[in-house]
Length: 537
Picture 1 (tube, rainbow, N blue to C red):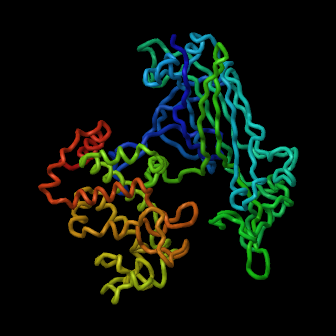
Picture 2: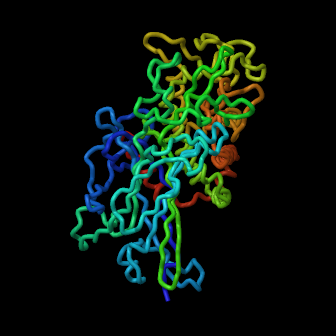
Picture 3: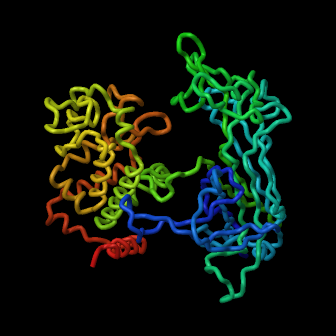
């Protein structure tokens, strides 16, 4: 007999983004750009979106445009997560089970209704706890919020400290809003051919929507007063209610506290010796785990869960980052290495081309001149210090990373800043990476200088002797830091693929020709057609 054997979420991981507007962001897709835009190959186009109706059901619509703000208020990103079922004989292997969206009709066929579903929401913010190494500073939904599958109004998530916490950060009777979660009411799909939206939009599947908080800051009473560092108070008086006796306010990290980086929170002067201490400010970001449980007849219970991360707004949504959550997950996936090793030459070309296109889009956002002046290694160590500066080069100081005595520089000179060219390094970086986004030019670079990419691209988590978060060489990616303040790098998975591609490019032509290219995937074929379509006739 076939039963519901398992559940899973689509997507299992989602990212919400803070915003003060009450209107959520519409959906949009990255598409191959047909517009005249020099910095990158992608653009964003509005995609089919949902309006949540007063009864909790959905109404699809196709936006005419993508709007990110309502006045000064940023629109939040409020992700939907669908619940799917795996149906089959529990006595047979899981490979024999089939996937189906979990709907009220499917529940009824298996003898239960929406009330048999239970959503348990555990939302937490552990930033202060991590940085000060004090577990009691964690706040969130204590206890977790439980929502029945037949409850379709938004349920607020209030952040507090666990009951019994000594000197709680959030005083009794107060809370920090962490957004809301709403279980969406199923709605019958129109008859075939009657819908005005794509058939892929299934209104019957059970899903939930998470709406994040507004992006506000909270602190103790002292944080509502201007300081020597800032004439603008860190928080408003209405949100200056945190307990100053909690050990986050005035924390200095003495005795080994403060996980690096220690300057990612508001600080104030702590003493005449120039030391600093925490101003005690926290924000309303959080991480949610939503556990979903379905109680079935005969006391059977199936479970799954989804995770939602809450992040600040994305102020460059049409530029793709070169390091993504997918890359980080691949880096930790045991199946990634075998799959990568099985890539054909054509697939590897496609992957590298996409990576360098994304690198170009990232570079297009950077003020390289500023970041070099702030974090460029100076003086350069002998390893990277050329005997003589590049003749006619205008990048000063000469002995700083990316300066005219940096041996990692190419022989192309860069002019000094001028009224007509205020950011010469930034312009040079954009032009250079725009060229490298062309796969053939990148191959030519590798063949002309076989060690160039190995010399320039920093290995995963590599830090050279003498480097620090404030002094980095121009190795790629330059002057960028990861979350623990070390130099940012590609993931190990990405780095290994790039170096494998370099080895393949350097093979003798007759040997490389023996590698039979695989047929392009549908995604790669679509990308190829889009690129060819942009070429002049």
